[in-house]
Image 1: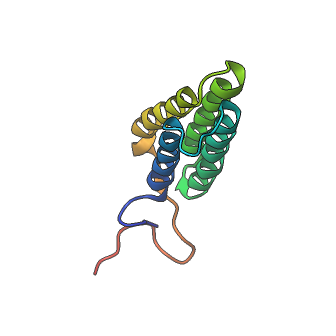
Image 2: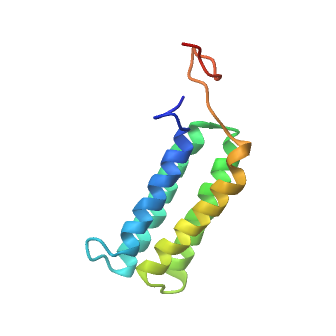
Amino acid sequence: MRILGREPALWLNSLSGVLGLLVTFQVGGLDANEAGWIVASTSAVLGAIAAALTRPIAVQAFTTAVATIASAVAAFGYEAAPTHVAAINAAVLSVLMFLTRGQVTPAALPGRTAGPTSV
């Protein structure tokens, strides 16, 4: 399954990074606690969806867990500014996507093959 020619995991992780960027620029005037909850929960939810759409699940689940934990620790363990929380999340997601990209493939939809189709 592809969305505009790209794997769903790439889109979902990129969306999570963009949302983190919005928090970095403090769109909406969020305080540190609100920003931490938004970044950590967004990473967790979008990462879980991406894990469900890729095989093997473990690689994307690991990426999600690390990004979510890094965001949560930065937000709730160190009283970090919202900009730092979002920047940490974006950096972790970017590095892990780069390192794990070649090890995941989109999950095949029921009744369809996973490979490209000829037109």
